[in-house]
Image (cartoon, rainbow, N blue to C red; front, top):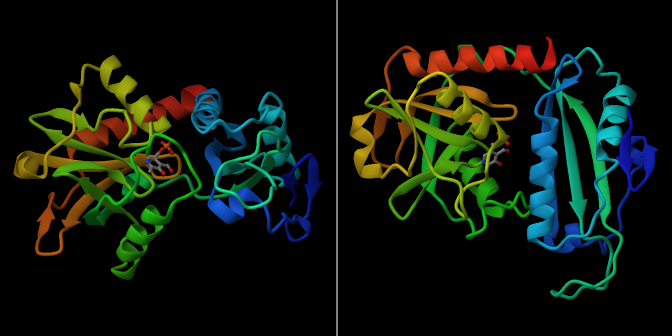
Length: 283
Ligand code: PLP
C-alpha cells in the first residue's frame, strides 16, 4: 500500500514529515474522512466542500483541485477497488520556525491514504455510550486535527468498553466525540443545529435530507438534558459509524435505557440510508 505525501506516493514507513511541521507542533491542521463502498466513493463532493470550508476558516492556503484524482489513486494503489473503506486526508500549515502566529508563505503538508474498514452490519449494533462534559473550544464546526478534548473524553468511554461518548455543553446535548447525535421525541427527530458547537456532519446532513423527503419531522434544535425522559430513541451518525442505535446512556450517577430493541424511527432511517448508499454508489 502507498500513502500520498506532498506529491509523492510512498510506502507508509518511508513517509516522513519535519519535526517543525506546524501540524506536529501546534495541531495546526485540518482533516477529512471520506467513505467508499466496494471502492465507490460516497458523498465525495460534500466532504471536499467541508474540507474547503475548514481550510478557509483557519486561512490555511492549499490548492485542493487535484484531491479527487489523488483520492481515486489512493484507492487503486492500496488495491481497495472492491473493498469497503475510507480515505484519510490531512492538510497542515507546513514547516516553519515555531511561532504562534503563522507565516505568510508556506507549503502546506498534504497527506492522503486509503484504508480498509468494515461498513456493513451497523444495523445489528445497539450500543452503550458514556455521557461527558463538552470541553471543546467554540469552533467545533472546523474539522481541526487538534482533538485533545475529543480524545480525552473518548478514552474515558473506552475505559468502560464503550466506543463513543456523547457530550453536554451548558445543559444541552451537542454531539459525540466523533459522531453526530440524534434523539427521537414525540415521533420527531431532534438534532443540534449547525453552528459553532458541532461539526456539520456529512452523514447528519444526509439524514436531515432523508427525513424531509420522507415526511419524518426533523427539528434542528438542541435537546436540553432535562427533556431526556421524553426521549424514546437515541442514535449517532458518522462516516464510519453510519447510523448506530444507542441502548443505554451512562451518566456518572445513573443509566438511562432506551429499550431492548432498536426503535422504529432509527430502523426506518437505517433502511433509507442503505437505499441512498445503493443509489449513489451502485453497490
Ligand atoms: N462530529 C464529530 C465531532 C466528528 O468528528 C464526526 C466525524 O468524524 C462527526 C460529527 C460525523 O461527521 P461525518 O458524518 O461527516 O463523518
